[in-house]
Length: 194
Image: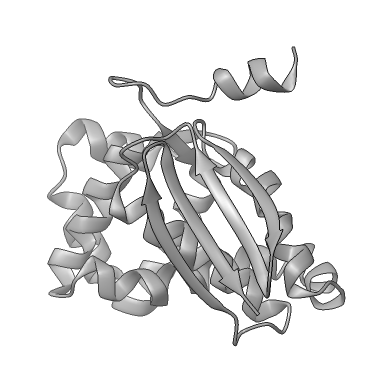
């Protein structure tokens, strides 16, 4: 299969179910528990539909979960804790992603400059989501990451991707890098400036 064919198979068309790696979801849930306590997380999970609660309970590394369902779970946890998800994302998701990167990646991240780390985001993205194609290109003073093939990507997914990028930048010693984004007709473009 050519790259163009592989990319086409990752297009999120209306009605498609986009999924995220359960490995990340499990890390995020650990992060929510660490920040908010077991009572807030367990209370939110108890309020889910029985079907979704069973699906979350059955998650294992290597599996996938629908991003719409992830949003329901995360919003429920934030509501249970009396906080906004937008406020929690940087705290929870960045910390959880740092935990992931602190394993095998930590030494590599510290040795590689921030620009190189961000360019690798495309490969990491492909392992994190079932849909969408991320490409990186150098720009003056930084790197742009174009996420295409996912028109209408939700705000929560954008915030999650930004949080993951910030975690990688912080570990690589580029914590002062500035991240911005703008929606495009086919997804979103992230700009990282060093």
